[in-house]
Length: 438
Image (cartoon, rainbow, N blue to C red):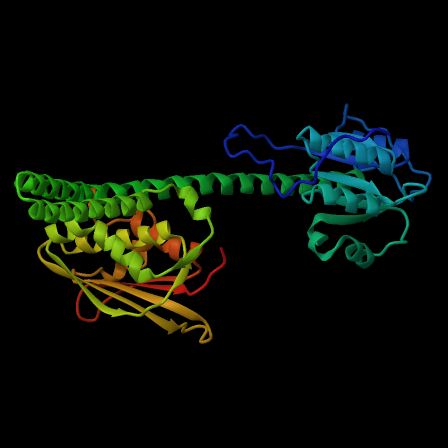
């Protein structure tokens, strides 16, 4: 017997998120070494005509197709059925189906397949190739208990098989097929939707990131303009001076150029691609990342007359993605500035090492960012973290805080908390484990 090239597949790796034309698969594999019984399955599951001829197994105790009066089938289901009559033939058809990208949703497997491996051993091998396969074991004997089958196939497979004793009728066959085929396709649909939602979330994060980049870019452009004016001014004033004056001027020009390079490097970090999130985390000082964010926001802070006050700065480190953490700080600072648009304000920052309240043994870094704005209406405190909810009207996307929360809670396994400060303003609290899995 030839064998088709096939590889073991992981759950739903064959899903294509861009394939919106997906139709439910109703592919079933029937494995029975008695040709008449295998053919009877096919006539029940994919009836060629209204009447189904009853067929009996020499080993069975009942009629396989006596499902309704006069032998008529009243089920509307019609499945795509293949039949095999041996272990080897079943394995060949199964591998061929995987190779063609047309896997079986489920199968009916006679336990007794003659000499050699039985149907239960066959299913274990098939589920090793495709863990998503559902199986129904069928036998007229009681030589294998349900518990023994479960132990043989493994606890992780308990939801993917069922058992039928003969005699049975066509209604049982169709119902088992309908249930398992539906489950298989619903899992496939759910995974497709998860893949699509993941892609939507990625695009939303990129969109919000571009929004933050645009806000920072305006300030960076202004800073570069100032630096360029410094360089041009120094060069113009000192080009005809003596050597010492020219040397001093060149030092100022060099300092200004280095400053421009630093701003450009930090801006490049902020505008990096979303793929950087999948790079390994590195040890970072969150205070240093916050300083970089403040550096990028310098023009906006100065324009809005916002004073930055460091309340506490512990020398601590966390494992993180530099771009992600920088994005969080940028978004929080932008929100704080917007909250204090009416005039001058203050931004308080605190970074401290502490013990997790829920798990006293866990070491976390707690970051607090507080503005001196009007705070948030208590009735909106839960809603404000929902995607697309904004209090800024057309000026806001409603994604900034939601994405910050996702970065801290999902990417870093931390906590993202909001509350109105007892005195004034809104305080955002980030609790980040000192070390999280990459």
